[in-house]
Length: 598
Image (cartoon, rainbow, N blue to C red; front, top):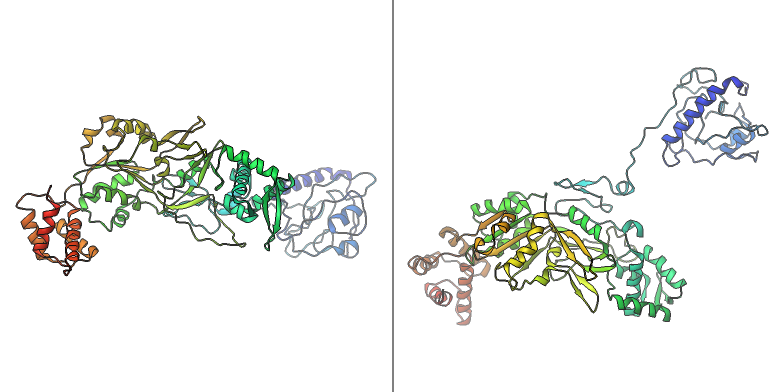
């Protein structure tokens, strides 16, 4: 078979092939070759004739070996491309160069060498009519792949809560669940993580000023940022002669110390703020995390409430009233006589929702540091992680996983606890109670007995309870909007209508009275509390107690009384060196003490 150069009449055919070639290039992604596994070839050179790879050999010399020998035979073998043996591009398509008069480069309309080494040769099973002038098959195109974002490609598709909130994928291997709906991903870069490099550098200066000397990886662990992101900052600080190497470590790291210039810089940073903990998280990232983990949209069922109150004796009627109130994720009044378990119920409400949430250690608000994690109010529950040099991380260590919070404020509640508290000496701000209780429960116990007036508290929260967001004033004068996303429970011994007006009651949709237990439940409570206090149960002594000290005098049953009376009996027996048991005379002694002024 002889080679025929393209004639002028083939110009239209060449244009069609060029259009097909450009269409195929656009259908490929990221420089993929024409066949799976095909090697990426360089762009054809304008000059440099001679032997070489196929992409440059044929294009530069214009030589085609029909028998498969010569320069064309030196190309590396590869799998069939699946293209017809017509005027189609071989191997990786590149944008063709128009042949110049002095450069005999084959044009687009010329017949390329097929995978079998013969121009125009037909492979077994290939469609006929592939030679120039014959019927050309339509250009083969690869199916257009999906184009997920980088984050979705790394972690899979987004999850969605019951409320329709899209949750970004978590670290590799993390499976979202009701107990843990979201987990922050370890930062890949400063930009993606939203880390302010100036703030991070100031924290590192303050830490070195306090520590004196420290290894690079320990500095990264202190600021909770991956070492690969901290190391360039340390290198730059070293080049600026603000820090120096004291010595090297066996782990290909250095021990850093501040130079005299660096100490002066660190003192200047410390005069502005003394914070040198974890690098703060952006406020917008914290707001997004609350949406991902909100209690709204979870809608706990009856089984969830039964599990949450499994250690309490709850009347089925009471449980049916509590269920919709808890599922609403809004707010409720618990009122009734003291001693019937209002606080105990409020403390266990959070157990009906998921177990864990993630909160930042601190938040950056235009240079101001606002602490969110509080060890006194939050129960740390970090997942297992690898340690040492092979720690692959997975989650962003600027965040901590805690048990879904339940924060209780009683008579000690003041207006200052509901605002941002800034220490003038350290210039570090502490978040208020409602921010710390986001995605959990906030219990105002003994409502009406606080140091602050009731109307002050109501006026402070009347808008947040309805709008589900709050405004906080920072020490710098900046006002920020933050989520108000918690179940607020007001527990009181007083009548709600005697405490608040109708406008506030309208924003608390559920008002539930915790009633006195019936006699049957009262007896059952004694059985339960006898097991807990390790006092042998005696039904006859319980009958004597009820018929002697309750029914004749019309004394109401209260849920706290079985526990309190059993402890009185137990302490009496232990003090007198008697066997711990229930006797009528022991109950007489306990009732004389317990009900003396009641």
